[in-house]
Image 1 (cartoon, helix red, strand yellow):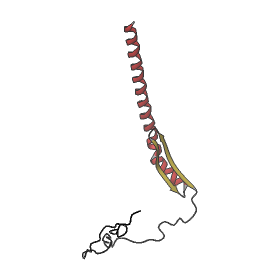
Image 2 (tube, one colour):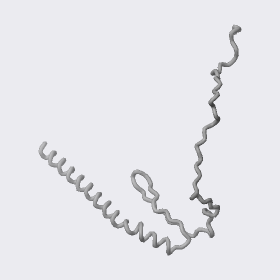
Image 3 (cartoon, rainbow, N blue to C red):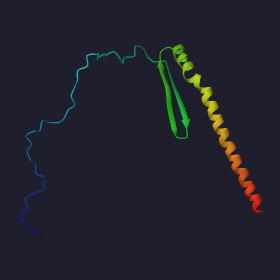
Image 4 (cartoon, one colour):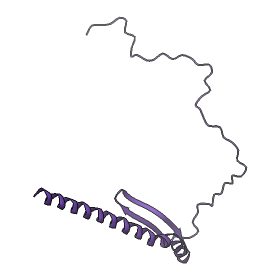
Length: 121
């Protein structure tokens, strides 16, 4: 190693003083007179007994929908009747129609291919 008399240690970027620097930026806080802090908002008065989760398994992944958390099973069943049961038959029908069209299309393509093979003979 050859000593370098001009070496002054590890390089660091120069720091230029900024007289306008006011510290780390923080967003302004605006008073909200309608905000009420309620410490009891998230407390559960008694242990949960029933939880319902509607999970859809589709090709693109899983969809979690219509999550119901309640302490009254009758109330939960009423919500299920209004939401999930009201749409499940229509969704099943739409899916069946889509699959039927897909199957018809495959059958048509198969027939076209068979016709082409016959013409080649």
